Length: 323
Image (tube, rainbow, N blue to C red; front, side, top):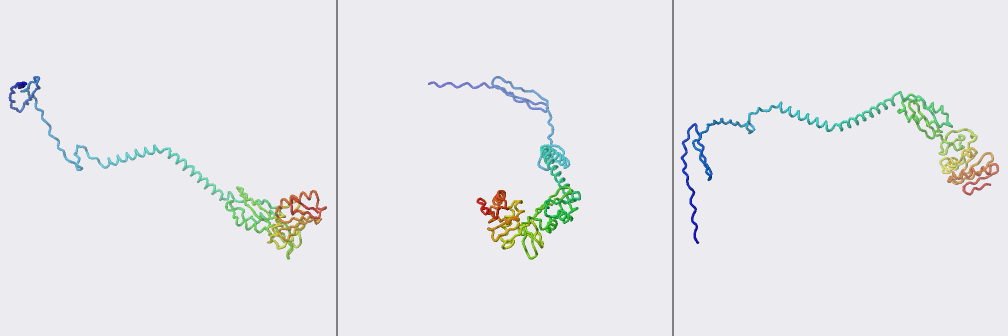
């Protein structure tokens, strides 16, 4: 096999030596590519002088000083103040509804407090002083006497009425079992009384003592009071027999209670009543089922009046015995 012949070398061109540079000319030379670019020689261009470089002086913070004036403390303070003012304005704008709601609630609370203070001030002033005392529920008692016992409360503001003084005055009346006070502004004080209900007379050395179902002595007289039954109770007012007799008397209708002239009991289970001028006896027995026994006795007395009967036995309310 035959070895190929080498390629011929590229043709060489003569390059002129560069001209010596002068002070007012600049020689620009260039070399074109293989397609025939030509060299430019002897072309002159004006010389452009360059400005002197600005010296850089380092500042105190190590940052180059670019020629700006330093910022003073007053400017910094003014900028901070403006920023805070703008921030507060934004906060106020976003919290306006909350502040209005808070202002409304504060206004309502202040109005309520003011109203309470005005009310208390008026209530404790002479504008609401007691000028009238009304007694309610006095049947056996004299209402005039009870009112006179409470006269020291006149002129006192209603909230300052001394309940201890009222109690001390009413304790002097044995017939008063309980009471309540009612204020009727602006000037009236109402005293509601609950009187004790006497059940009979107990004979003592001092005479005849009127007692209620609790054994409280209401009054004492030398002779027996007409229309009030005499009690013959073994063991006295502190016995169980007396408690049973008191319960029986409370359960009687008013129409029958007024006819009772005597009550006797030796035990809690043998309470006996005596009716009117006929001396009709009512065997009651114990205080149990007293309401049913009272109803049975009332019906029996309608069908068989006491004048024709000597004994009503209602100890068993479902099986009454009449003799």
